[in-house]
Length: 278
Ligand SMILES: Cc1ncc(COP(=O)(O)O)c(C=O)c1O
Image (cartoon, rainbow, N blue to C red; front, side, top):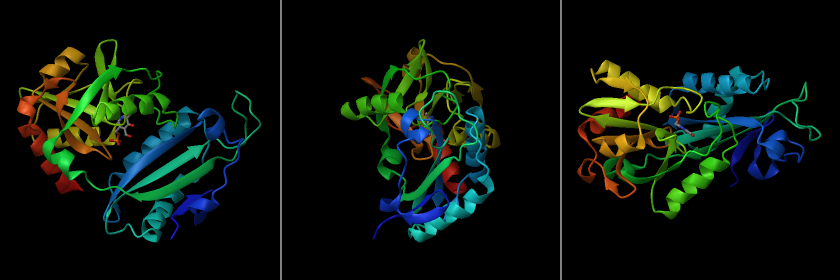
């Protein structure tokens, strides 16, 4: 049976989606996206995802009116694809719409919206045992705070991780860690959780935000500050955080082992509190 997806106002079979070659998402990667997680049919941090989507749209001056209708659409996608008793993800992408190819933003375009649901299990083995990661120069642009579909640097760098048999690639800009190709990065040193402050160089990760809330509620000290690649190697624990990764420990960075190659105490506590929330 074909997957039911949502495209420009209708629920259709995936094979019935027809996107114009003039769509600016296709021509310029002129669009934004979100990925939200649904645990047994219930969205996790839905409002945070919607607020971030609204911000991405507004930064690119894409005027999409029907934000309030999205929650019902996503719920239908989960139900119609029999994902309501599983861990699932919703992918939604909104591009500026279609127009003859010009660089400036044409006015009065009707944005193109595409959304689908997919099974997104928790990766138990990674959560339990941790993953190996690599580091690479952050070759992305300077507006990484926008969740744009223009992800070629991210895919190139993640592909390098895959080729190196690693689970993520941590990005370094001017010697300092920014984030990873599709996750936030947090470190732990002497019981303190350290993560780069929000800026145009990182996506405001929702899992990162949840972790900082858990820290505040449980008396775990947090430092939002820049940290270097050198400091990364000296952390007691490293966390790769994201909607898909949840709270995944990194136990090796390139050739350097972190925390005896075992997930640490703070990571375990954060995982426990996180899964109580979801
Ligand atoms: C570049 C980047 N950073 C961080 C994250 C983590 O964000 P979130 O926790 O909201 O999924 C993502 C998620 O896709 C990402 O693509």
